[in-house]
Length: 381
Ligand SMILES: Cc1cc2nc3c(=O)[nH]c(=O)nc-3n(C[C@H](O)[C@H](O)[C@H](O)COP(=O)(O)OP(=O)(O)OC[C@H]3O[C@@H](n4cnc5c(N)ncnc54)[C@H](O)[C@@H]3O)c2cc1C
Image (cartoon, rainbow, N blue to C red; front, side, top):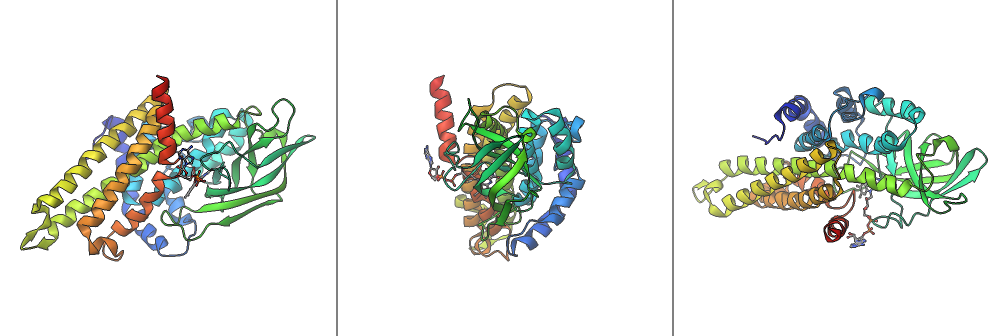
């Protein structure tokens, strides 16, 4: 029984995901064994259910759901298949800056198509030399009359290989805000945009990650997002919200690791009785269960604060840090409980869960960066 902070909001989302859970899990297992390629099959199933635009505003074709419902969706999809939660959630991440800082015209143009899954958007911040130090952008946004000319390279961009459009960050070359990070909406079919799918990813393989190049890409100046020079602030605000989604993803996959461990430990016989009778196994299960519950509550607390319009940056970082490390603990214990039958992928889902989990400690800010955010916030008081 999963704890709902608000059963009326959360349980219907869980029930909706359950309707497609077994199907996306099965498709996911098949995709996982193939070379890294975006799963349009799973994406279409998610989009048809309304999961791709779940919390985008209704006015722009989204589901208008709360952050708590979005977190519940991420948790529940990740329970069945962690990469599918990215396939659903990345459009939300990439569209968020347009929803929050874009003009009405920009919202009309991009959000409804992103919400329905007709187009796939990307959030392009990270560069080869600007990861945690995201402000160290080398991408330039030069001014050429009514156009921008964009030059630069991005790396690790989710869905960048299949995206139709991206929110691209770079340093603007304009008097008054020169070299300040700015954000521009870039259609990826423009001349000079190139992409490549990054291969041999450890997990989350069919929610692809890409390298992007921009060579003298001419974009109309009307595609500037918000104000020039405010791009870094927009990126950080966007990542605050996205961290709650990752915390939910980590919680969902950890819950799956626990449920699989409970089931397996009751059926595996060693020394004449189920291993669930062994205190060594029981303690692992007790620790997993307790940590998952703590992570879930931190995640819901952050989502609720976001819904209430309160400051939630600290809560989001705490939830992301705790659940990323908690889920690492849980997949590791699940592997230990399953032992050989966990390590070999044909016997259980543990080997895949173990690989899918690891990225939660890296993207949307590493665990070290979450600690930095948390320490800065609590020390400031
Ligand atoms: C699968 C995947 C998907 C991603 N999706 C996207 C996406 O859609 N869009 C996007 O823009 N980016 C994306 N990223 C990028 C991701 O956010 C970065 O990888 C992450 O922020 C870390 O940057 P880095 O890999 O360059 O590591 P670095 O920044 O080089 O960090 C290396 C190590 O140093 C530590 N470190 C760095 N600075 C500090 C510090 N000040 N204090 C303490 N420790 C520090 C880090 O914690 C880490 O352990 C994705 C990455 C991956 C792998």
